Image (cartoon, rainbow, N blue to C red):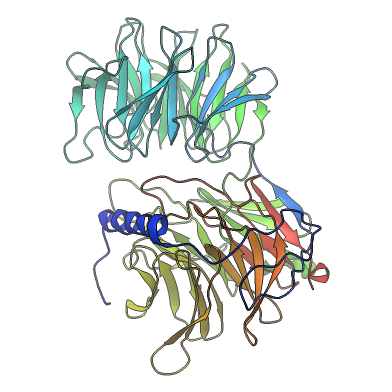
Length: 582
């Protein structure tokens, strides 16, 4: 397969749905569930090449945020905070005084980006990716109305009328029937998918007009919801994400840069109120004037005091650690890099302390709007190769020099990428159907569902999540040669080569009841598989336009020989020290 054209988003969706269907109806690796007890060392699988399990001891070195990103927020009739989390696929109920989590609402909740309580006490939310609007009545009854992908900001006016806009996956403004009986009324329609500028979290002013930010244009506008007429109120923002009126009558605006402004909508005067961490997402004022705010990139929830200082209720940190890469650091310590959706985070491999954080290093592909999102990462000398199926991008990046190579024009839905000795970058791409070499865009190893990779010189190993196969590709001399070197694994994802040349594979349960969650080691000279540790808790979830893996659970090996594992449901990075592995 050769092509000079970048695959469209539609091709990604087609391949993703195909892979999901294949998984649901035809794939079931020949594995059995092993003991979840990490102390058990005699568990064995049915694979004829399996040896005795080793079960090493895992140590948590990095503990992430409690929430996998914090998005829309409102205060319920019970006085608690209700917080939407798109990637957490939940609505969290939190005590606004101490941050204690009271409940996690998941029934009918798919990808909640914003939420609001209606006049009757019902909770409404928008599932941005599935394009549905949900309602949960006070008695717990859940109903949903299907609309369009991109449903995001949601608000009631004083007359109990419900308004919703589309963002990122669409554009426009609509009025909904709170009972979900009538078809939504179009106020501003964008047939091309972009015409308004992504009208984000908004609020009605005393004049009855709807005020809110245009995320993509850096403006604050007001809209007459009867006519659709709109007017700019303020400008000069980067990515304003929310605008709400406070008890002082001023419009508070938060920008994803971390800046929070106060605007007098009658004069347009804009004053900087405070500066917090980048990634700000949404906010709500309590009846007493208290301001509560969320941060999507960091996952924290805080009360913003009158001084502008944040009183953290739920601490932030990594929200979805996926791909891992380890470089040599000073004093023979490992430096661990984790792809965390909106950030690449750098950690001290010994202490787990975050030593740096890089935002926006990925150059978004050309277009009206794109976020720098990351999911796969691998070591390349002193560089890192970063992949993003969400942004359809593969880039080589250095903490000092920035981006040195960009392959975004050649990939569709890259899951992982590595470099071999010849200097070529090799990509495992779900949208392109397998392993592709960037030098000539050739498909060298078809895979049903492309997954993680590992490389050692001229040899690359690629996992097929659907079939459970590990494909070995030899790039040394002439045309690449391929062979399946191991089969029967349980939905393999991340892979790495340890310091003794053995292949480590993170196996997951996937959708199969017979699936397992373990880190396996394959001796490539004998074909024997042993369990390094079982009872893992990989990230789980699913959405229609995402890969069937949801997010990659990964493994990496440092120069020290220590093994690092990401993808835990507890939002951690764990380590197995070299002297604890047999």
